[in-house]
Length: 155
Length: 417
Image (cartoon, rainbow over all chains, first blue to last red; front, side, top):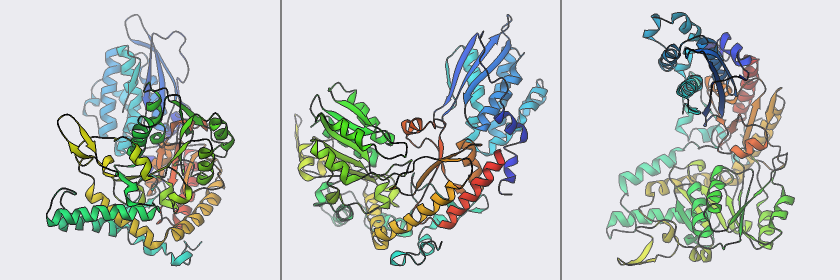
């Protein structure tokens, strides 16, 4: 069929998270809120974090609209960072961006291997330069939230 | 469908496609199906050759040197102006001002007419269906503390201009300028130009048309339309980027102050002051786009040789075919159902976001634009903030390509279902 080779990009797990994003809700007791925008595509999300007393991420949720890639990435991101320390969450973000841009992540074999495994279905995006920012928007927004900033953009 | 093989004036789309070198390539192993001509059209061999020849044989700066090459280049540049004047039936070559693109042409009017001629208390009317290029300059004029208001004419649910609303906006006689698209870059709607001009003139307002899309698909006769300003761009008309056109009547251009200052636009300069050159030079500061003007001339000769009526007939058949094929696709929402429309279709699928859809179509070799096409307010108007995909046709588009698009859309919908 016409689009068979696109199953690398749109793996079943991505289509599933794109259709039914997890943690797609409002956090009533959020400590941090940041908005992420891809002005060129109209992708937009609001990410909320509830922080634990030690500064770790106790809960993460998002709302917004966008393509399957951006919604799936935000969904997987919130699942992955829940229960992580701030340093771990930032490290995951840095590795994910490398994965999205190059398709590989040499540092991923070390710690957090299981978490990175969960994110690898999105690695196919590196073959689509115009779509990388769809996958990274959620992680830019996470950094903004952790920085205490209100806005993020992956343009 | 025969792709107009036996259409008006012997229009043979397969022969025409051979004039466009880029169309013969494959993308990701599939034949290129280029459906983004509304953003920028591909270039035929005569345009490419004319520009190369200009640089190889006849290039120097224009209007400056008293030597053979400069005179030859000046002659070629001014010949391009004459070709544009004939193309839009301008009364005088001097009514054709070369700009960088339509955007610059409309900014020129906003600056020189809006700030130089319009009076405090007057208003500009633009519409909900404009490209940002015909909205943002007027917002900037409104915000320039000159007491010039901005009024926005609504579009109907069908994607046509709401002429009753236009009449209401014109009623108080305070409108100085109506700035409106001649063909929507999102909806494909062709606006009733003569009627708009009659309404505006009766209310004492001038009319500017953004002809970026229309000039490619229809014969434009500025005298028959009766408008006051007409803007279009070279790169959508199978010519090069970097050259556009503002047409206005000579007496109007004479009344307007310059836009940019510099060389070429002056008649006399001292350290204290300067006097302006007559139009069109008054509006062409600095070294112009010489090679691009030559390319635009070649593009105009190219479409004129094929014949605008033949191009229009071919595209009309394509539009009818596309309407049939697209509207039968389940789950597809098409923006705009104007009676009079050209080959621009913006649509969304219920199961797929515009960007996912364009990535899929790209895999099938189909180039469409995804997003809001520089018309965010219009997408908001139709509740399509997330954007649409847009397929836009050129004179080289075939009905087989439309069929292939329709087939791909059905499969894309299944892919995401």
